Length: 112
Image (cartoon, rainbow, N blue to C red; front, side, top):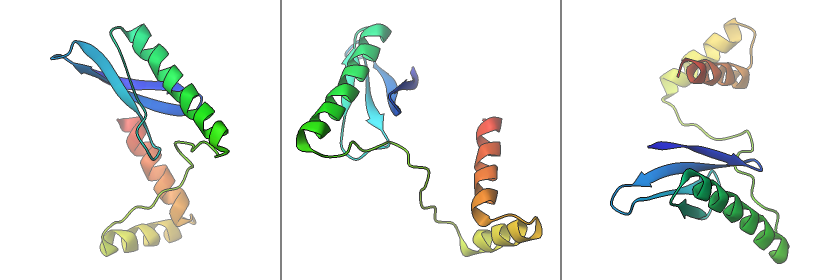
């Protein structure tokens, strides 16, 4: 069993440990480890939300800005040949490289 939880802009995994008989997960997309667990879907969800709230509260106590999971930019390394082909495709279609990559990712995810 696997899935995702969402709360206050944060995402978390849902996993099942047959050996322990518990659901567990971790917040993804941020530095550091924020984990949670529960014996039911509801208790897992409650612990996830509590973990996110605790993280936000801890940041406030430290005077630090809570890290947002996804900022909308990331670095991708590809082979130079693919980079060249993508740049040519974008230019031929009057698009930027960024908009072409975004469209390709969107199309891939929608097909998923």
